[in-house]
Amino acid sequence: WHDPLTNRTRDVKIVTQNANGPCPLIALTNALQLTGALQIVGSRRTISGDELTGMLADRLFQTDAGSVSETDVTQTLALLPTLAQGLDVDLRFAHVYDFSDSGPMQLFRAFNVDLVHGWVVDAEQEQKVAGVLVGECSNSYEGAVEFILAADEVSCGQVVAHNICDADVRGADAELSEKQLATVRSAIEVNAWLEHTATQLTSCGLRMLGTMLPTSHVCVLFRNNHFSTLYKRGPGELFLLCTDDAVAGDSRIVWESLRDVHQTTSQFLDSQFRLLRVGGDYVQQVEGREDATADAQEAAQIDEDYALALKLHEQEQKARQGQQGQQGHPGQQRSQLQVRQQDRMPPGMHVREHGHLHNVPEVSREGEAQLARAMYRSASDENFERRMENTFMPNKAATNSALRQQKKHDDDDKCIVC
Image 1 (tube, rainbow, N blue to C red):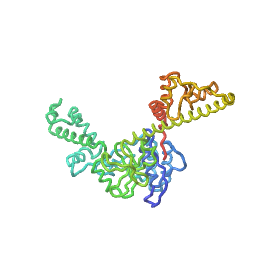
Image 2 (image 1 turned 30 degrees about the vertical axis):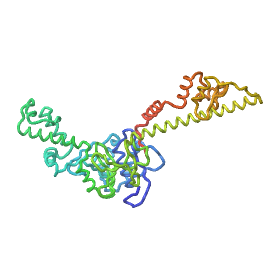
Image 3 (image 1 turned 135 degrees about the vertical axis):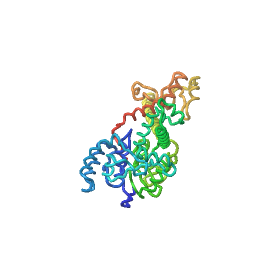
């Protein structure tokens, strides 16, 4: 990581999520690490949420006297343990820094980390909705929800449906006044706007993030009820730190570009902001690599068993040759069973004259336990094919199922350090 504050390159340990990890805690910790205010030392690979909370508390006590009041420190310390369960913030739709003043905002201020969002209404292009949000909803998300619910109750449930006309509203159980009708219409428009911008990022908000944030600035972005570490590298260059468990296993992926509202044009980049050629469904690719790794391990185990079987077979053959001396076996014409087996053999393998497969060990009483997974001579064509298939083609579905079952037992209260 090339630190823009010191203009030096240094190694930074990034905390990533496992299953449903605490995103506010992770986002704040990573932001502090990128700015150099916090550092995870050692070679550890995992860290618990309680340990991260303790590190943040220690960092809070190390702040300069006077920069944070004693009251703010006390309230922030009380709020830190709740980061593992999430934070309840109420954003306002005016600009990217606009949040209702609350405990979570005080927490981010105490650590000198900006909390921003991109859910901004365009006052020029959406004048009517913007006017209702400012005049009736305190221009906040919670105010908008309360306004919609109140109008929905007055109209007997017509607002949430919002696909109605005046006749439908007047046809409700109670006759509405003109003022109530105007309120219901406004609530319908606000509700439709909230649904249209359900990703909690608008084009106007994205433009503001690209212009209002300082260059080389690290902050925390609240979007889609999720907290992420955001870095503005240059004008319009916004990057999200990749901490989701789906990409945590790939050390190449560090950043994801934020270029549009739905992230349909986003790209993955490495620590030096070099583009990575990762296409398609990345999560599906990760699962495919896990399956391929499991299959390769299974195949390697089969190869080891087969090599062991050949070694034991050679030892038995040498022992027999020592007992038999120079005696040979008279030639015999191959049976029809041997001919059929010979036709099914891979290149380099053939059936010996007395019925056993060349280079495939026979089972002895002494080696039976060690040769449990080796190949054996078949008594019939059908049995021969079935055994060969079971030996060389392990059940991939069973292997994948076992891997996924094992993955479910991962420690959920751990975060991954990479």
